[in-house]
Image (cartoon, rainbow, N blue to C red):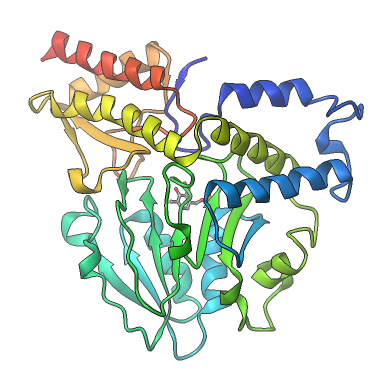
Length: 360
Ligand code: PLP
């Protein structure tokens, strides 16, 4: 298998793929795939409930939180959040950290008043605004929204804001379950599955039940969080196979030491590549300021454009996949999500060091 550094959909643990393959045609002796049977069957219900339970366990969620499975990707959450929570006279507050935060803001503007509570624009979004710079009026704020990891720039919050009486909402699409967090700080966390959780098709929403008290009654059922809390995310057919895969990934995370185990592994992996950048004497440059660097998406450039192209060619020829930077930022991006093995990061660091030796 190639070294997979795609930003999403992204690598899955090989053990998970192998188990899914073994169970593909005959799930636990029922003679059919889990894809082929009712979402009301006991076999599926077990998977559904186990996955919810594993989220609670891995994130150490306190009582009062629900784990929901939706469709429509994280992008649908950009609209559902203001539709459900942004009532007239209130403001949706956003920390503007880059392309994904911007998409969330653009959607919220369609539904109500938005406020940029802090912005990384002065640094071209290559630094996360400092927590002390985040300004929110708690009397008016319906919520404060952050993007915990900006997948495109490669920046990540290293600590989170806390405002009394202001529910904190986070788009964790690209770093969910990659490190321990104090989940009780968040009123709502959401993530499209296709980076750290499994295949695309399911969007996980973890929310404090308290925040869904005043949802407008006119919302379409499928865009109302209450529909999911009231029906245990089984109001309609859930994305059964994606949830089945997420459940396998959650078990894999548990076997790998839970979130503390993954943070250690992710830190070691990212260090290999950041060290190759930082010890290159300017041959490579990291795009993001060190205080905001992501453990999940490592963005960097080579000091000379021709050499950068040559490095990409060489990497592709040696079966490193997905290293092109996002078209809006360019250069290079190595996405080192949970399932990317240490060996892949070691191989990339070795390739970078060797390339510099030959071309430096
Ligand atoms: N938010 C972040 C941080 C992302 O990285 C992405 C996708 O890459 C999205 C939102 C959009 O997710 P989806 O494609 O599931 O709508």
